[in-house]
Length: 222
Ligand SMILES: N[C@@H](CCC(=O)N[C@@H](CS)C(=O)NCC(=O)O)C(=O)O
Picture 1: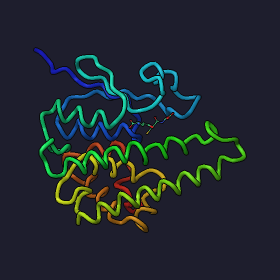
Picture 2 (picture 1 turned 60 degrees about the vertical axis):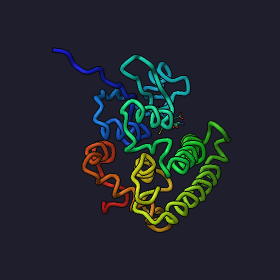
Picture 3 (picture 1 turned 90 degrees about the vertical axis):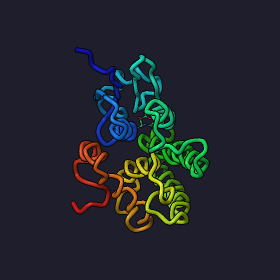
Picture 4 (picture 1 turned 30 degrees about the vertical axis):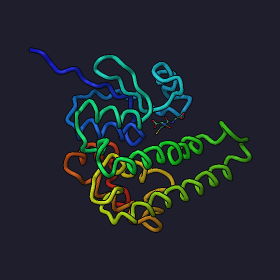
């Protein structure tokens, strides 16, 4: 008996690895999960993740041919190519393609680093400045979410790109669980929260979201 080669995803439930995990599940690609521990906690398995990613960041994805990838945006584009599918990534001729690429890079280049920078503030500022620094980074992040929320609202929903579901919705559904948190989204960006909830409820993605966020969809009643 032969078995299909599988992807190996270095991950921690609820962290950014949920983004490629959701895509692997969506495409029906076989994958194994390798838990790394809390990569921001020196007492956890930071050393192990540094062996597979010099930045010590999640996620890391090993492809069946042995190639090792970091960076969720790169994974998003490559998995779509490998799956031969435009279901999550509009193809070169699709009318949503340019917007898709714009907002994909906007999320990973602008929004995602806010989590990274504020997660361990003392990497960048002194202990005394850490609280204020985290607050300022979070304020910046709220502004960035508003920019994305406005663009999504202009397209009329129900997804970031309007009528067309895409990997952008998966990013929103994962990240809406993080700072500034689901209640902030509910108050200031209800459109993005609705996208997050509808994405997490999609039958092909619901098991991945349930595994990563056992408390339920972002904004769900506790
Ligand atoms: N640009 C990276 C960002 C990855 C990232 O920041 N991951 C977080 C976890 S969600 C992390 O590993 N943080 C630990 C650190 O930066 O030390 C991507 O899109 O994959």
